[in-house]
Amino acid sequence: MTAASPTSSERMIEPELLITGEAVALEITPATVANRITSGLIDYAVYALGAGLSVVVVLVLAISTGSEFQENLALTRAMLSLALLAWMVVIPLLVELLSGGRSLGRMVTGARVVRDDGGTVRLRHCLVRTLLAVVEIWGTWAVPALCASIVSKRGKRFGDMLAGTYVVREHHRSHMAPPLLMPPELAQWAAGTDLRALPGNLSLTARTFLQRASSPVPSSRHQLGLELASQVQGYVSPPPPAGTHPERFLAAVLTERRNRELVLESRDRRLEEDVLRDMARPPYGVGGETRRR
Image (cartoon, rainbow, N blue to C red; front, side, top):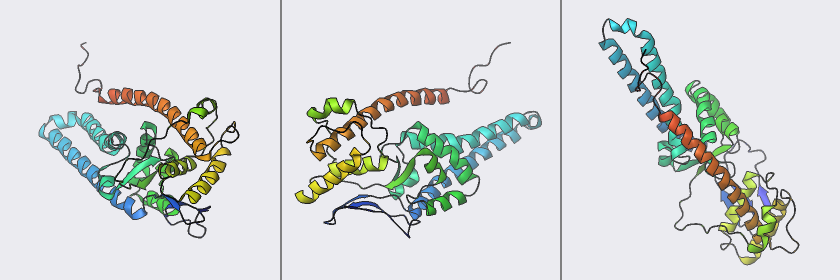
């Protein structure tokens, strides 16, 4: 097995391949720069249009007050700032968070934002991406984002690099991938393992292999399973019991990793609900009750 890593073509967006000697490949395809440009144009055109209409509405309402316009100039500026904040930060954040890494533009182009290990993005990932977009997209006409995407192997912009995410092309399958189950004989061992050093891309490759384990010929599958298990074992402590089948070892590691992530995700979900509840609550003096003096 050899890992296909670009040498002189580091700047090209290429599928990440894990290839066996019999040319059996597991493919994880980052979105191309053209794909990201197209989806970005759609998304930010919608956000810019919404921001522009909001600004027009605020100005029309302010001017229609006549002589009160000068007196309410500070309020008008505050409303304009809130409108821009909503369309540049709040709405993109909610769209990406609630859709699981998708947006209107990505739905059109068949792309999705995922974590480096292939998992669904959470609040902290979406927040970092959205805040960085204010600078690298809104503030600079997307020039830094475009340059970073061209140079990066996975087509990442700076927001992706800081958030630990990237955009992938979605492959629609006619059947659901089989779920990973914990081998009973490895449950006790897996519960006490240290999995923190396991790289996200290796975890994603191993999971893809197990979900497609029935497609390669048996000899190729066994060889690839051995090589993947050898790579994963270097990041797992303590090692599995002697004589463990490589695929059952991989299943135990990935299932335990998934279970631990579910615990963290449940905690993060509660935090996200609290944040969304606070964001939905009207600020003091705007749409809420004012304090009587």
